[in-house]
Image (cartoon, rainbow, N blue to C red; front, side, top):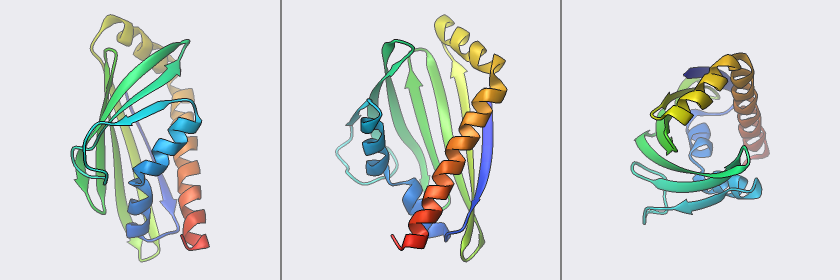
Length: 155
């Protein structure tokens, strides 16, 4: 199942990439939402091969997901491969400079099932594709707004 959305952000390309790759900030957000996040590689900086194990509650069970950065081309491209219980997916973030102070962010996801229970879960997402697509668009729009706000504040 593939989903794609894009947002234009009033901030320079380098600033947007720095915000999108602020993984320690994303780790803190996940912890506040009840997830357990563990960095698996020794490197503390973002980059190719960075790996996390994330345990989070979903539908009444704790699920564990491994996320690995498989592509890291500053300041334009980031790809993260995720795997959990029979489900694998890619999250790709592409950034394009529209001007010196405006950046287009395109976020794409692609999920594939490798087991029967994951196929059923993915099928339920496909049936509710419009709702799932809207949730992704809303989350990416909120991230874009947050990046714009940080840039305006001079962070």
